[in-house]
Image 1 (tube, helix red, strand yellow):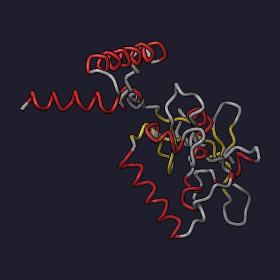
Image 2 (cartoon, helix red, strand yellow):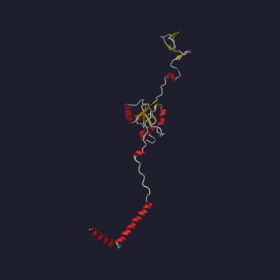
Image 3 (cartoon, helix red, strand yellow):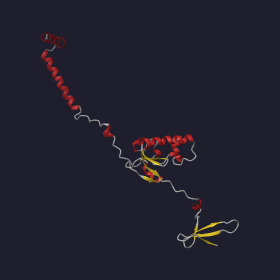
Image 4 (cartoon, helix red, strand yellow):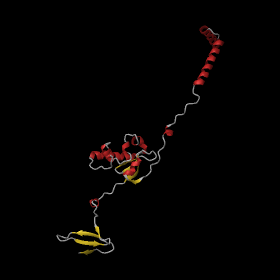
Length: 216
């Protein structure tokens, strides 16, 4: 069977090429040798680089660092402009590390203007106005407060709380006008004036190391 196939192949080679079988196979071998020689000259000499997997391309995030109680001015340095610092954002005075969502809250992200701030009012109103980038939520409606609550629940479940925003101490009206709430005598005793009926005020002097006494 194999001998018959070989004889048929030889007859076909002679009939279609006009060469003897030996000449035909010699030419065929020379052709393949020339092909590999040319492809070796122009083809790549080094194997293609191995593609890096996802773990190699994505650097692991450092663990969240507690910043404690900081002012709104101190919070601004964590807006993502410094890649060595964590990316922080506050809601209702609670500061969260949102570094894992840098593509949203980092520079160039759709919510980048919220980073480094307490943006409670802006989140409640879904506003991007500069005047709403504040933690003041006074005057908001029930719908807006509900939306803010949803944002807070989302942050509590997804991000780590790392600190709180230090609120300024309220200043009383007397301190604003430069008037102390009480007056003192020369020896450091506090003097308080109390009107008695329609008559003149009664002045009482209280010293820290003495029992209360009255001075007419």
